[in-house]
Length: 412
Image (cartoon, rainbow, N blue to C red):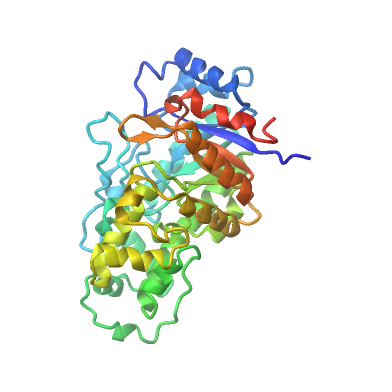
């Protein structure tokens, strides 16, 4: 018997023009897709558009068996306030990523703190409002993390707000000491010699090696991961109480612990997950942006040039062997995509994993072709994923990039 693959698609309500988001036009996009492949799940969001939401979630007009609300839990949610943002070690607020400035896209990548009760209550209130107002089957949680390397190192090692300081203290971690280490004012961490070495989340062994012997930083990494996992658990529990499912949009494994995502801990709360193991995308989460940003910061940390830093990383990250920073910036190597997919499956063992399948084509920014789709389908099927998610937006996906899925064994 052929394996049955789940096919999902993301449809964004924030990345297109008002004209293209007219429900009648959206219906044509969706119908064109359905002529090529069946959709098991539609992931819709995140800006609320009542007419569009009602059309695509209604029992008689929905295009798939299930429809999930695509929701940015810790970024750009309604009611988002600057006081919600994570705080850097030098008391600044998250500055986000400016790559979409001037494009008319309302996505800042500024991250709210998962321990700030005001940010959490504001975001959850709107999430629950949408779940009660429309017939969604579950929520697809995006932006469930701390800032990534694409935002710059200053944003990455957060948060130092009073709420985090209080929660960290409850677990025996002093964020003032962590701040001193990050600012390189604490020498060899003599005051932390008595601390127990912490085991940071799996997936980024390079990070474990980098901070070996620095228990404060290890505990800080674990504290951040616990903060995210606890919030995921809270959302999942609330969804279960109203009979809804929870799914997660997560980073590639090699990057996940750095943004506070512990796959093994998060797995128990998700009905399914979608790792963003992206080759072509430009911006936060995409490997061709995140890996070069990481390598450049590693060079500064290790006191070496970019080439040496890349060699250090390539020796520790499976699939990066032989690549240069310039090559990765152009397109992430398929060998890395393959290795990361296998790693994600291992870390999310027991939880259905639907691989993010880049299908968007935007001239000059992200030019995905049918052969690229075919390559990822081959990677995913060989690795053993349970499905694929057309990412990140059906409205920017040429129909030629949909057709390769029709030949996927078990899709019908």
